[in-house]
Picture 1: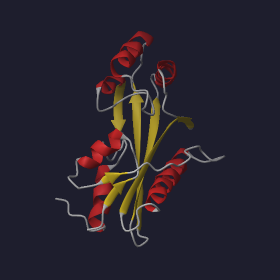
Picture 2: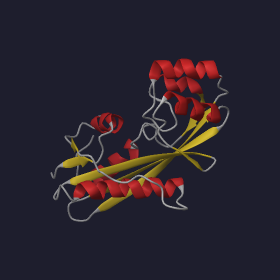
Picture 3: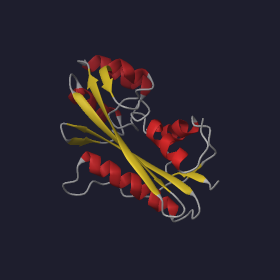
Picture 4: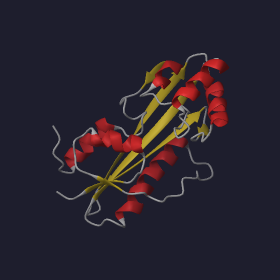
Length: 191
């Protein structure tokens, strides 16, 4: 079987792909992640997932490459990774009692030009949040490298009323249900 490479240095995506029990390497994609003028959140996620896969494919001919990207939006406004406590606090205060949508796209490129791709949409409904509770959460988990300012696989789950999704792994950053189906089509042996 041709090598499998994850076009990402995200520990979250690496851990998720590791669940499938396949041997793989990782490589940094070096892609400008800025949105294009008028680009929708879903369009941005799809474009970036493929761009990341293509950037890494150039360096690894003969390999299967997985690219993925997640874009969060609240009422159409893009939400990036907060980077620090103040930005995370602002994101979570603005999300209080509201819904945030997470567009998680993936792209699997093959060594002979094959392309399989898809996207998951996850909607997270936040409960009414209080500033002191948010600050306690941020002190404990420090989710400053996560779009939306939370880690649903950790303590962040207490911030929600509900999550609506086809694939619970998509919210963490890599939709394993659809991706595992694509990997089977590509010839990878999975249970």
